[in-house]
Length: 232
Image 1 (cartoon, helix red, strand yellow):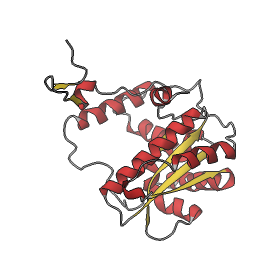
Image 2 (cartoon, helix red, strand yellow):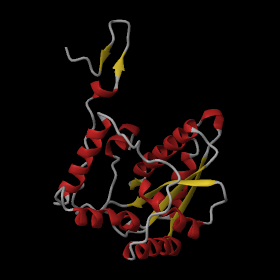
Image 3 (tube, one colour):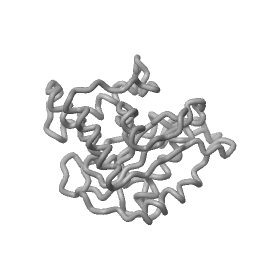
Image 4 (cartoon, one colour):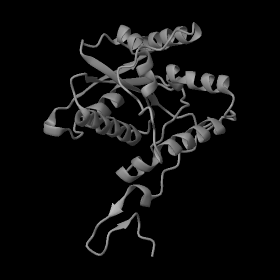
């Protein structure tokens, strides 16, 4: 699989089979991901790859908290700006419509939406997961480095025939994750990532659309700046 195929076939899979993922495959992917770029080679990511009994324990703990309506943990970072402006607000809304529409869940059916969202904390049935931490003393540039690391991991997983789903949802139960993983003091859980083989029979498997190129890219080439692919 070349890099273009890895990029264009990667998607956030939310239905996995329970097929075992060999440890050597996971090790190969995260070892290669260490070559992801980071400013001054800080490598500010701290990743935990979790399978087997520890992952089952974590899923059980999260499931029990959900069942008892235990409040989410105090957030350690802001996932979205409180006043999300256009066009980001519309893109987020369109994602929600596509995601829940594929599941046949109406916009006003909040209970069904919550049930669907609860699958996050079962890793959507995946048999492996990665939890990525960052030192709380790091700044925006290092958070960007962590994003590049995670993207590198996901593309390498595709090269191995695997799929993934990055989940900031796990940050809502960061205390439960810490109970199982025992990370050093001073680290913030940025996100989890479900890893496994996609369930081909799953519903809602279509990729989320992307904004047209001209909305996000401007070409400046000396022949007159133009947005996107220069329709002519």
